[in-house]
Length: 165
Image 1 (tube, rainbow, N blue to C red):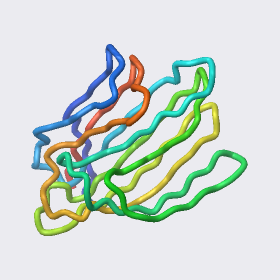
Image 2: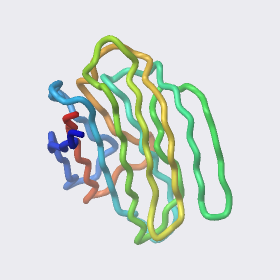
Image 3: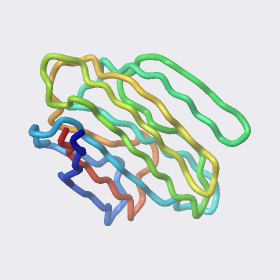
């Protein structure tokens, strides 16, 4: 059985706060993509920050099933929306937020795009896992990671990998 290889396509580390990170002109020669990101919490008080994704700046066709837990309860959900939301949780100072999206067959033009994600914060117990699809047959050439409130802090890192099958 062949082993998949991960090639770093792009890496961004914020040197000033921002509400989005965009990967564009994505190389179409791989089978799948993996997007890995992390950021530190910045305030002594609790605050919320979202991690949302859009493909090709499209605001339609995202379908998902998600499961969230915080150590004392679980929330499950399904639906369709204008973006992919990996997590919305409250963090405290010294938390580190981490997340990963796997996007399958992103360059294929004859099928919808499937994805899986998982994210969480440590040492706070906030975990999210989910899967879904983007109902478009367009090849994914751009991925925008963004938040509608607050900004991602300095030190936020996002890395995009191409996966050869």
